[in-house]
Image (cartoon, rainbow over all chains, first blue to last red; front, side, top):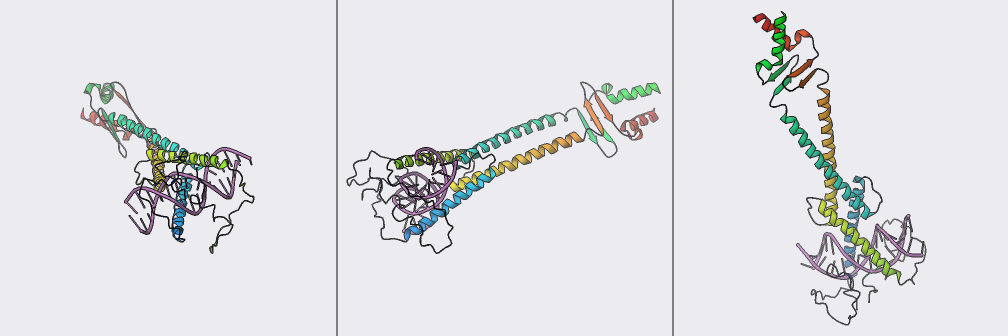
Length: 150
Length: 150
DNA sequence: ATCCACACGTGATTC
DNA sequence: TGAATCACGTGTGGA
């Protein structure tokens, strides 16, 4: 038979339409000189079944992916993968933006209340603590004004 | 090129009469009526080429997906899809958590300062405004204590 | 040497 | 009518 190399060629050689020398040149590639068992009739059944199962599994994943990705333009497999990748990149970018924004907000909110003043509310009253010269204290002004009035 | 023989594609030899001897329940595939044109000898080449291109495109998407998904357990296609879906769900959940957290923080920070008290800092002093009975005012205690002391 | 995953060609189907 | 996909069976190479 002539065609043992032109079947698929796997990963090494994709397609060679230029090959004319098909006399009996043996392939120097692997030592796969084994003749296919043309007698075994029930052997490929297992293979066929396994392949079918694998295909079904992959299609199941595709179906699941169709469920989780919004805005599916077409039900085509390739387009679905493209949309999924785009959506995934969008999510990643969004998350990064939110994280940095959160970090910025926290830093600006944590940096401010610490150094100068501290306000703490309790059940029926509140406590205000400040670090400043006493004559510039707001309560001092109030007290002084009240004292002068009395 | 000796491409066409029964070794590559086993479909041609004993494939589709219409009923394989299957004793199992088999869903009726709607077989399209119509004889295939067995004379067209130039269109299979185009067909093969188109299919090859489609396969290559899909594989390209797979390769791209491998790049954007972290923690790829195996380079297997099905597992890759599974990991991608898991990762996508994780991202979605993370985004939702962050959004709700953000909303909660904003609401709790906006809801509180409005009704009871208002603290506002200026250049060298601050303003405190409160809504409460005067005898329970913290400043009232201070003033009263000071007045008694004086 | 058995299983697994892949690429390939091809018939069938859909737009 | 063709072009684009899908599903199928098979050959093959790697653990």
